[in-house]
Amino acid sequence: MYDEWKHKPIGIATVSAGPFGGAQAMVALQFTLWKMKAWTIPAMFSVPTVDKAYDEKGNALDKSASDKLAAVFVKELLWCIEADKEPKH
Image (cartoon, rainbow, N blue to C red; front, top):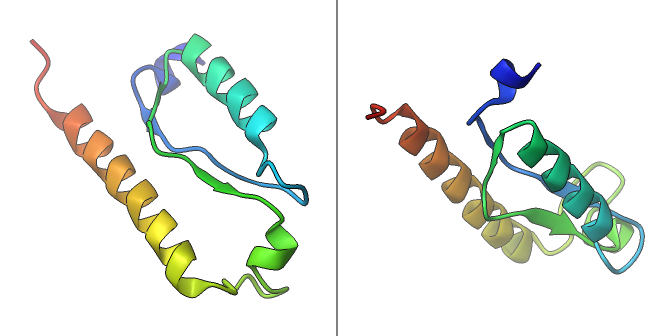
């Protein structure tokens, strides 16, 4: 399965009911993806206390903050995807 993941840009998003936003899961997943030779982007989308951040339909309770975080995450992911398309020397 390494060839399918090798050098592929991957963004990690986590949520949790607690205050840490899935930080431990994020680190473990990032380490696993690195071992698979995947390229995890520097920006991460972490949502602590998800029940206080989004309603039951998935709508952000603080849309401005959520949109700002998402914009940084998506911008970084798209940049990495484009960079991955560059010719290799």
